[in-house]
Length: 277
Ligand SMILES: Cc1cc2nc3c(=O)[nH]c(=O)nc-3n(C[C@H](O)[C@H](O)[C@H](O)COP(=O)(O)OP(=O)(O)OC[C@H]3O[C@@H](n4cnc5c(N)ncnc54)[C@H](O)[C@@H]3O)c2cc1C
Image (cartoon, rainbow, N blue to C red; front, side, top):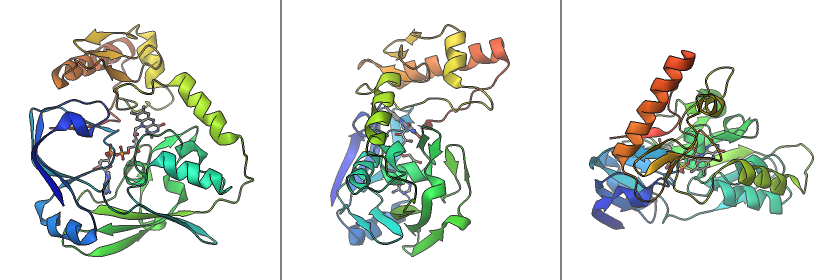
């Protein structure tokens, strides 16, 4: 098992901010995972929806990236390990002519991260397609949650924060398979979103009946900058780290956007990104 003390937080999120954590642990199998659950760790997938806003995160962080990865198809279900990337899963299902999961392609996270915060794109979200999840609780007991035991809404679920998602079972969809859909959605994503830059996806949840990006645009905040963090010119709900950004810059920009939107439109923006300190 790999255990790295005082690990740089920049290395484990896609926006690349923050100082160090107490330790970063990568178990290789379930036996090793069992040995560290008593540390009350933070589980991290690909760190694409997390931003550390601290010099020192005083907790163990666990990644399952070195554990076995698999995807199985049977007559009714798609079962996969929780550490599979959304893009790999979507590509595999496309290659096997399984419809309905094309929207996951290009989401730069793991299926565990996607389920945990009910990720979605192109008018779809993952949770309605989850048949069940296998989890490990803080006492080392594996249990299963069925879809009807999970409540969820826009970018959130009630999955116990102390439980570790080990595997995900999705329902096979019965819609017609469209050979072109995956590429089409991928093109749309490339046109509308800044990919291959340091970011953590959408910063704010869309307020009811509106879009955070539209509000930020209307307030002429596009391109607005604090130190090394700026609002993307391509998509106003993305903050980009130009490589020199710090979590303090991030917080300055975050506060500025919230204040301007509140004063101009009387709308309170809530973060979609998980802020950890
Ligand atoms: C360029 C870009 C584009 C994006 N596009 C989209 C999009 O279209 N739609 C969308 O919804 N999001 C999008 N995101 C945000 C992000 O990719 C998704 O939210 C993704 O599902 C997060 O997965 P992750 O593995 O990175 O999770 P992380 O960010 O690592 O973690 C997210 C949450 O899941 C928990 N978690 C992770 N693994 C486990 C586990 N095994 N067990 C228990 N809990 C766990 C973490 O503790 C945390 O609470 C985008 C991000 C970027 C950078």
